[in-house]
Image 1 (cartoon, rainbow, N blue to C red):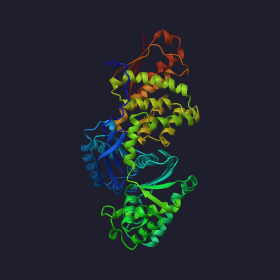
Image 2 (cartoon, rainbow, N blue to C red):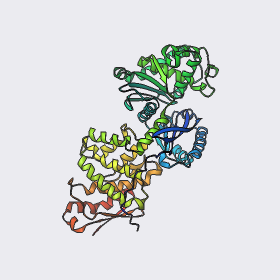
Image 3 (tube, rainbow, N blue to C red):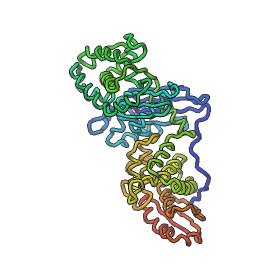
Image 4 (cartoon, rainbow, N blue to C red):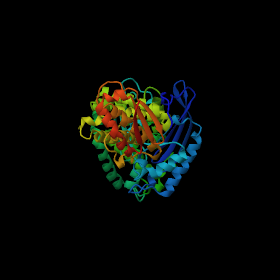
Length: 512
């Protein structure tokens, strides 16, 4: 039997001066990697890699990925993995966007992808992607005080639209309309015509109209475009001496008219347009014209920053005292009226148990942070109903847009909250990536014990609480005299072992 000590398992330290950080962006069109060094509190880019993978092109209607495209993606990630192999794991974050979100079974791609990269990959929602894009632009183009910005990012599979002030996004939207997706959807045979273009423009503009009025009412002081489509259009405008360094409505119309002089996509010839961008350029121009039309845009600057820069700055926040996940947890607690005192009691005991089990169960600082957040949110479902509140809470956490969390992160939170009490359902951990499954099950056992120990909802200290681990087993020692004065808790502990088996963990309670 291993008895682990009670020393705190801290989260990884924030990056120090001179440390290298890396962001990997698995986009629907291209995979990007940026390596930056922390210098005087800022990030200085020291390396960039980009490869055209066209992941979205390999997706069929049922969400299956063509083997040739998967092989291309894995080969790229293996090369990226060689570049970041020497970096500290907590200084790396890889995110996947629309194309991976649309996979019928993402794990069939993510398992080999993570093996090739040598690092976990977070699948992020469209609204989380939008938050990170805005963060990247805000740091690259420091805003003026009280200035509101509209940021438009046209990717391969989706388009993100964000209005923000300073470094804070105020509105975030993500639509399934990107340069690859729109080219495939409206020009599947590669043919272009003004009539086909107008029909497609009407259809896409209608999709943007669902939030256009809200955005126009909120307003903005300047508009900024990001990513490959916007940069390609901007470069063409510069070459044609249109827009004076920006994309204007008039310049965009002229680019579209020049584009439609060609009957086929593969015949398009425009100044500065690369062979790599040509096959998907029509869909990108179409989406941008729809954005200009729906939002009544007149002028848009273009930034070199995008999602990957936002991921880098988010890494800085996660390593320091500005982790967006903690702010999101606090907001959820306030929104759903969580009893903060009870949440704090459960969190303190869960972390006390964690610190005693961490060594034996090889749990990490990130596991500790996840357990703490789950403890704070374990009663979020009470705002819906007491009956089955753990089920309601899990649903809220799995299906909400929670800033700072990946889809896998939200799935982990939801699983911990779902399994805190009652019978553990067999599908409870189906959404958890295999690499995190053991730690999430073990953390669920610790949260379950903490919730049980505080059923009385009092601030009474729990005497003589000690935890030991052995394989997938737990031995919980409690002061016998103290437990005699708490008969309800004693009865609960006697029945806890049977329910804990649903987590694949055995429990023995001994009196000291």
